[in-house]
Length: 202
Image (cartoon, rainbow, N blue to C red; front, side, top):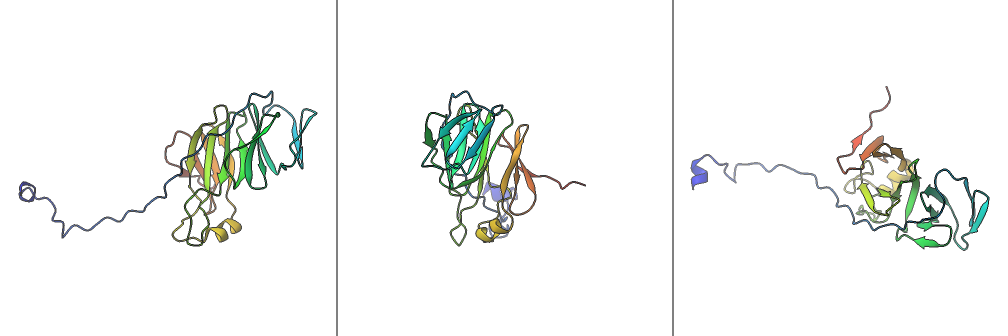
């Protein structure tokens, strides 16, 4: 009664404010790390299952190296759609089974990729792509974001990703630059603050 007397809004006359729900981010698992004498300064080549680091060959058969990113202490690579790590002595699974667009920072201390498996699904069952960045020296996640990856409520994500394939562009200082499937590039700060769309060049 005291609230009513003070002019509090009547529940029947106040119009509800619509809010747009944001899909929850999955809990990111830690990634393997290594202590191998390898990093971005090394000359690294891959062909099939054969990895050559400064002239030293490593055979990772039966796995293939379809894409790789060199970090401090080892390499992340894609075998088909699966993400693996090797310290040149052995290969270890990461638990990510559907990834693309592997990128390491120039100093090899950070690593990012698109996770195409763990996001919420659209009406056709396609998961929303997730940009994930990690500290490659500790294996701990830094940030994850759906910025620019579409809307599970309105988009057919399979068509969207085929028409405008999303991808990790590069690390830029303390941020990750991502090309969004919904158009344009996005800057995702590694401190967890809000991503922002990068203005197109004038």
